[in-house]
Amino acid sequence: MICRIYMDERCRFWLVNSDMEKNERIGAFSTFEEITNFLEDSGIKYSKDNQLQICKDLVYKYEIEKQIAEDQRFTFTYNWGVPDAISIECYGSNARIIARAYELYPDLKLDDEQLVKALNEDIPVCIHGEWRKKCAEAYSHCYYANERIEFFKTENSELNIECGQRGTVLKVLSNGFIDVKWDNGQRIFVNPFRDSICPLTVFACREEAEAQRKQEESEILQTDENEIEETDEGPAMSM
Image 1 (tube, helix red, strand yellow):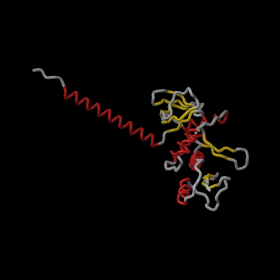
Image 2: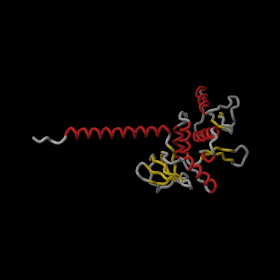
Image 3: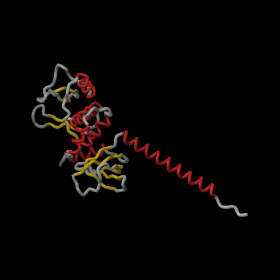
Image 4: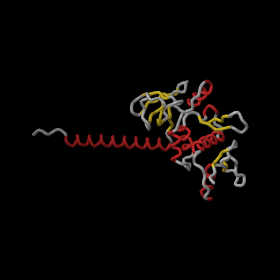
């Protein structure tokens, strides 16, 4: 029998069966790491087809514990109109919530294959009216000037941005569109309601900064060598 991992409204993690019945005998775990360590130590198999939902749950748990303002959150709860049918959803794309989860919890033990599948099937939330307005406000807080981002995919075939392209946020408009200066020199707006982007993790930003530092040191060294060569050659002395 394969169990699933579920997070309740009190941000506790449970083992549940296919009918979403909690395993009361084992009880709840306070963190995702605790429950996955328990499963591995016990040799219990668990379904990895809900990796994306786990990312949403973890980010939601963090935002609740840290009392993040609603207009700055990545997640929200949605009531489906029937008792106990409340789900945790995210503003924007799958790529965005996955990147946020890994940023908050670098040691996550998630299934990479399932996460890649979630990204490939990524369909950004289509929101209208008040929902769209609320999402636009959230984007204005989640993305800020000079933040580094990476592009994943888009529904717009005319958008001339390649997957994996990186850029720097210039500003976020009131409608949620993001003005980006891409590393290839282009300045193209992205629509987070249709385009999949995510902020670079702290580690990726550090790698970029280190690469930039090495490049600058190399250029300085090359300049010094050229100046030395010019000095050594010097003008010929007349006799």
